[in-house]
Image (cartoon, rainbow, N blue to C red; front, top):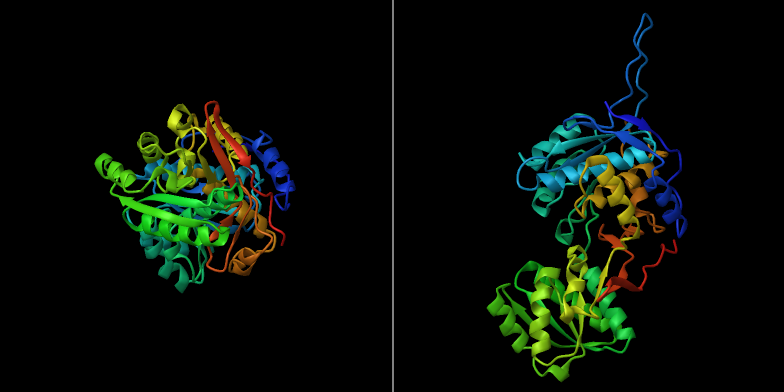
Length: 393
């Protein structure tokens, strides 16, 4: 059983105060000595007092389920999310919550049914959109909200809330920033498929909102030949002054040299997917590129503390597990154990605080996030337009 020290700082501040509060939580004010343990309650209940007296009963706690893949091909990511959720519970001092993790690999619907049968009144996860589709009707029938780690807006609504990083938001942010710097003729490279279609729609909307125009948009199938053909089809290099590569950082690293060889000096723009690519700064053609993503300032502290506890670094999406528990702990003070989760609190326009910055749920139940605009340079990635610290209420 882990030995814990609990830190009693509250997690209820808005605006800039949330960063200081989270920095205290992540700065080592709580410790854990990990020992071997399988899936289940995190952390375990206090040890039972032994002797001639009757053992004291554990105080009632609000029950929260984490649905994540603990076996199968996504087990590493799922375990990282579960570990982060446990960290958040310990770092906040427990906050009257009992967190139990359920493996979705054998079946997300079955995991949800088990979680509900065991009395959980809030579900954190699952990870994938297809899993959300399985879980949603089960949770809806029990009137239990689902805070999913997916970013597929098609599964949001009717009690399902999305914590994942929505690509449309990063496109809107970086296009607005580019337009504010005078770059208003925008071209785009978008992958075939659902992500590409959504990126295309987001770009058209963002350009319209920013007073910019989309002068060329070419799709590709992620093969080198197809990407090269798409770059060639963009048109005259002088015809656009910004180029959105709506794909991963790995694809951007392939596209950037092709764009420069075509004679284009346009500013490259990217999405939140670039935030997980550590080699961007090593590419000369990528120099000066802008992309929008969640702030990383607190994530670095989180990753260091996670590594100290578990012996290896977290997956980037593990922060969603941590932040979802922070949200639940904030609401727990007004949540009577055994009663339904007060879902109306999720509509708080003042938003919530997390490792990934301020966020709130919009009318579609999608997390609306404050994003940095970052620039790729020879010395690394820097912030050229920082995210706002919170919402006005």
